Image (cartoon, rainbow, N blue to C red; front, side, top):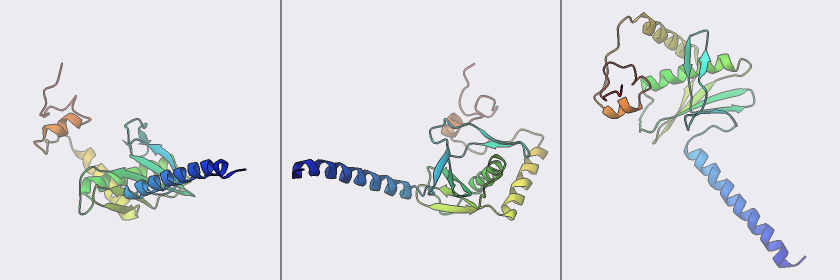
Length: 173
């Protein structure tokens, strides 16, 4: 075999190695946990996951499986110096939902990624109790909640926009 016959496969291997290294760097920059992807809703096409025992549902951005561990991942497009309370409760809900959907797996933590930082959120008994308390509190409410913003953009993206009486956008009827 001549050098030209060897050079082409080596060049292809080098290009593939560069692409792979670039993908690994990109994955690390988003703080995506290592493992096999078992669920993904980043493009909004994931199915709704349900906890029938708690009567809650959700769609994490991604769920990774590594060994006996399941790791939920949620990406937020804003900056944050610490995890926001609502996002923490969202992750606590994902823990409960995933425990019901993957009963043989261990869910020790999830990753909450903001544009500027990533946070490891632990699945603890205390956080489960916080989730149960907020679910109970929400079920006790017998009135319509008040809109907590004046941002029309939030209303456009809201999943309740069709039924909200306080929407800042005009509904087409």
